Image (cartoon, rainbow, N blue to C red):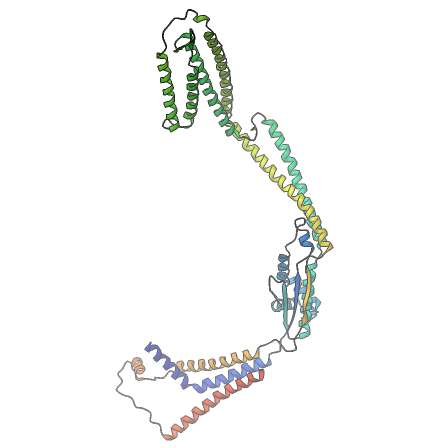
Length: 508
């Protein structure tokens, strides 16, 4: 930090040594700059404000029935395209600026100059627009703004009927195109269904759903067949005498009673057990409790059979019980035969579906693709029909009333006082630049013709030891001269500052 401070002091001493050169350069730069700023021509700014009203009373009334354009977007596009080359060229012709152009280059330069100077400010949501243009000729500036205002309003009104007709014509073309696609899609679907009528899905179920249903039906029918066979075999055992019979006394006679109640309960439990085992493992609580209940009923059945007294039944072959058992056996045989037929039918269906495992999914995939394309075209076709009707109403609405209205808040005006240039600011910049320019010139000269301001700098450059230094002894006469030169320098600097102050007062 100390070295930096020392170096800065050396630079300041060098500038102070050539202070008169710096002051002279500052005077030259200031006078020249102020003269240029003073001779700059006045610049007048013409401006106008316009309000775009997008609120129409019919708009909320016709909501949902018409296609309402995005008015905010239209206004935004109009504002962004206002200062475009075609519009600026039109302005040039409207204010007769093209008469001054001698060739194509002059015309191009004139258009580019207008595009750079024209400014359009907007408040965005409020739809308030302000047009600015600066020129040395106040009348020309006003005419340019007026021309831009005319172009802006004309661009907003436009020919709505022509735009609506173009939109309807485009929609009609799209409807015709989609109608042809729908006819072709319907023909393709009809031909595909006729070709693959035996492999099409039923009731909206695909191949794998049908296969799953067939498998479930087959397993269920097989289970019913086993239950029917077990019931039939139980009746056979009762007829042959292998099944125990309980003899009870009623009055003075005894007759055998088949354990129909226990057998029916056991059969129902076995059926429920088979159903549970299809869905759960042997360790499931419901399966364990069902097996335990079946075992208890079997044990009860055996215990009751032991209590039956053995005896002969000479009329056994002609007893009513035997006849009932034979009838029950015939019904059981019929039930078994019926279930066997169902098992064969479901097995045939299952085998047929398994044999079509490759063909049916392919057919379903092709049908899904054809149907998807047809549904997409149908949906677009119906939407286009709705949009066409909405477009017709929207076109009639746009022709009957203006969706946007333009209100000129402030017509094009030009103030009496020029808008520019800002001479006060420019005078200050010139004054500051003159001071910096003088200091820069003095600093450059001090670097071109350097001097030693201390023993340390001389020792560092020469590389030799410094034995001593002789101080300058100023006489009284020299001291007076130094003071006069210092006063003269201060007076010259103050004169430059005073001249700058006078210019600022004049501008105020």
